[in-house]
Length: 189
Image 1 (cartoon, rainbow, N blue to C red):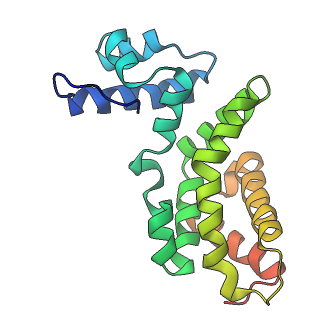
Image 2: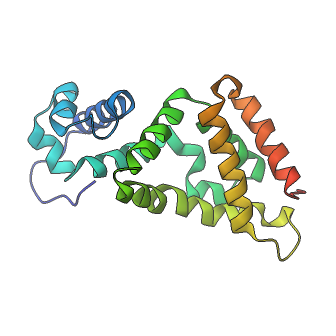
C-alpha cells in the first residue's frame, strides 16, 4: 500500500473490502477488464478511498497477491525456518486452489501487453521466495548443483501442470508431483 499521510485513521474494514473486491474482479475480468471504479463500487467505498491506498491498479493487484490468506505458508520468513516438506506442501496448497491458478493465468495473460506487470510480479512475489528456496533445498543436492536451474525446472513444471491439467491438481496430487519432479532432478533430502 502507498505511504500514508497524517489524518484520520484508516478503516480496516474498508481495506479488506477493497482487497476482496479487487481479488474477485481480477479473477473475473483480468487487469485490463478491472477498473478502480469497479473495485470501489464492489467494495462499497469511493474511488478516492481506493486511490488513497493504491495509486494504480497494478499496485492494488500486487497487494492482492501478497494477501496472507493467499500465501501465508509461503512467506519468505516462514519458509526460511520451516522444514522443506512444509514449503512443498505450501506450494502444493497454493497451486491447488482454483483462485490461485486463475490469478496466475490473469497475470501471465496480462503480461503479454504489460511486461512491467510480470517484472513486478517477479520482484515482489517470485524473487524473494526463490532466494529462500535455494537454502531450503540446498541440503538435498550435491555441492555445485545449479539451484537456480533446479528451481526454474521445478517451478516451470509446477506452473505448466497447474495451468494445463486442472483435473489433476488436488493438494495431495501436486505435492506428490513436486516430490517426483525434485527426485528426478537429483533431490535427496
